[in-house]
Length: 380
Image (cartoon, rainbow, N blue to C red):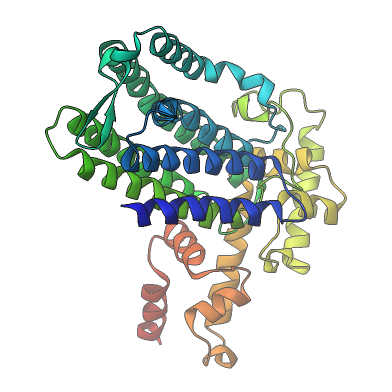
């Protein structure tokens, strides 16, 4: 039991130090450190409850009950700071901590206003707060049940909106993909409910309290390891690519209603873009973005996006990858490329990973790259 908590506390501290050692720390780095510190404090409170029955620092047991309502909003803030184009400012989100302050204040008030003999009962080596159990458990259960649904939903919604925006801004999503974060949010949601059930089962002696503590501490430590590993290497999606504020609120119908481009101008720009794509082949750059292509063509990002969306009825992601797929089809039929694997040809065509290429090819062509190559052999 102690070993698991030691590992979790060490990981939280070590990852925090690594983040602070980064040269260009961003807002999401600081938010991640805050969450790691809270997780370490939570594990420490478990360690104290598990190992000590002394009443000298009895208030420390409240930490384990109060911190989870603070951790949930912080992880939502972490998601927002990664995927939103606007700079994240905590003062806009302070109200998310109201339940945390309410719970902390109410527990402390009732705790310190009870008779000393009512505060604590030592039972099987664990400190039990029977004096405030009814009030504490009722409010705690309501708040945590609310948090367990609200913040995963808010986080997943932010990721969903973010993913829709990416296809208008990038031609390759492998470097800016947030699937790991989506999966982690879902796993955290499951882990939270497992922890909640285990704690309540231990409190009512449905299972051994020691068993519930071990399981919850293990889940927290695993959570620290997962989010620490991925979060440490995650870059800000919009560090160099700031989306216009409010752009995500616009619908496809009114997105360009204020544009000054005429139909003739739009058609001319489209010809210019298509000519450049054919002659210069900028799509061979796997990191090609709306901003970089607009810069090369001497256009504004807004005009380029409007032309692609309105004239062709597709987003930037599809526009560029159609050229890459066409390039792949040409290269794979050339004898000089016979020694290359499918992935090798895909990399030569502007893709930067096997997963992104396979996904795009299947979506645009309706078959897998392997099936397409086999069809070429049969036709020959």
